[in-house]
Image 1 (cartoon, chains in turn purple, yellow):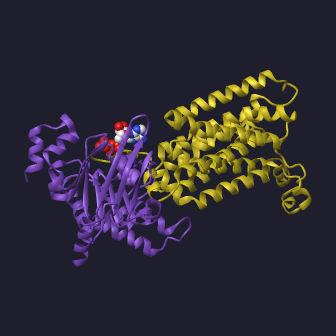
Image 2 (image 1 turned 120 degrees about the vertical axis):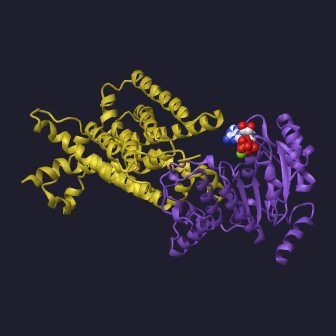
Image 3 (image 1 turned 60 degrees about the vertical axis):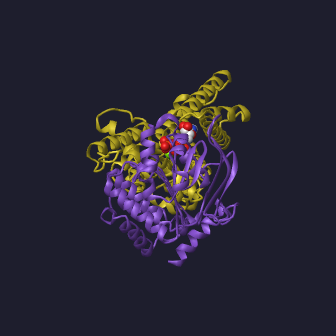
Length: 267
Length: 309
Ligand SMILES: Nc1ncnc2c1ncn2[C@@H]1O[C@H](COP(=O)(O)OP(=O)(O)OP(=O)(O)O)[C@@H](O)[C@H]1O
Ligand SMILES: [Mg+2]
């Protein structure tokens, strides 16, 4: 248990340059065309924390994650993971993309998808051994999908697909987990299962960053928030940064005032 | 006996047709899954200006300059498609459409403006190739396969396609995992450090190589059909990528062999005098296989969307 406390207190006391942080983004600007999708954003994610990235549709949440992962080249700015450039830290990063971003009709089975998480270990021609399959099965068990290992991925429900994606990220055996809307389109049971896994990761000292849309569950699930609407609106612990004022600023007129007050202050 | 005539007249065209079919069907599997299947079509159109330019420069119809011209035209087309797609932010289908119609039109214009009437460079050759003429006259029977002297007179298309097929197989074998990963989930692949841009580009180049080699030997009809029909039929047979690729090789082989035999003997069986174009028949057989799998294939009723939402 001390290890966990150390990790968190390290994070909170970390220096301003973020060399010690799990993720440090500095002056990041990303653009697809004329208008930047993410503009001059700074973000610091302490080790062992669980951060929700919050903002309206099109605010640049997915873009920020992709830039942090080195999937998109930013116009300006940099991201470091555990004090290193992303390219040198890939083995320590796991990623769950937005579920709608892939072709679920692809001819592959659940277990094969989880095995994709082992690519960095296997390399181009490394032999796939029994131990790899056992590990993939263990990851499926952690999300309660072991009975579906041989299913074609198109024959799963949305919630089951999301669990498979999570299992693939678990197979990556990383220290920093990026998840893009892991709860979108899943029922209450799956949401509970996923959050249990994520909190289990945090208990093991891992760092979790998730794009999240349901404001009412933010205080229950996360300890930190990052509000974005192209630029950074607020960042900090839930108590500091998840307030009616910051939400109003991030969402503009798109949320009713009453709703804001309820979610941020209530529960 | 039968052997002598078969080895001399039918064996090599059949083998060449089969090799060309497999070389196109293999990358076709990935192109189909990436919704880029039309790229085979595009390539077989753009090689026309390449061949015409090669003829204008060298003044002769010879295999090597034609291949080089076709290959560079294919590369130009691939670069153009990628550039239009990225700079113009247009969907890939439209970028290909623009590129291949423009280049094919350019090829036709060039052909009309230049004096190629004296040589055998026409639309029919471009479409159907010349499979039936790729015979092995020095063969005297099966024993010729062990006869070094006779082997030296094999049609050059045969060893050439063998080399191209080896390159295709090697590429897909070595890059199987990243190809699969980046076809299924590109941003995840990138997050693992796979350079999906160059890899996708390499896939298209390998496909172009197969298309150009096959085009030279068997014409564009087979190229277009083999990029799409065997992989599409194979997809309906299985939900597993490796198995799909195996089925596509089987279907490509069946198309080439059955198509060649039907073209050569089918009309005679029906009492007609002349054989029909082997290339056309091979393409037709591959279409028939696709139709058959669409009716009886075990995985034809797939739902792209999840069962419940
Ligand atoms: N591939 C792309 N090409 C062009 N523009 C894009 C692309 N991806 C995103 N954008 C634009 O960038 C902006 C930010 O998009 P992004 O996907 O990061 O938003 P988001 O916060 O994740 O939204 P959502 O909540 O809907 O997932 C949007 O205006 C979007 O239209
Ligand atoms: Mg998003």
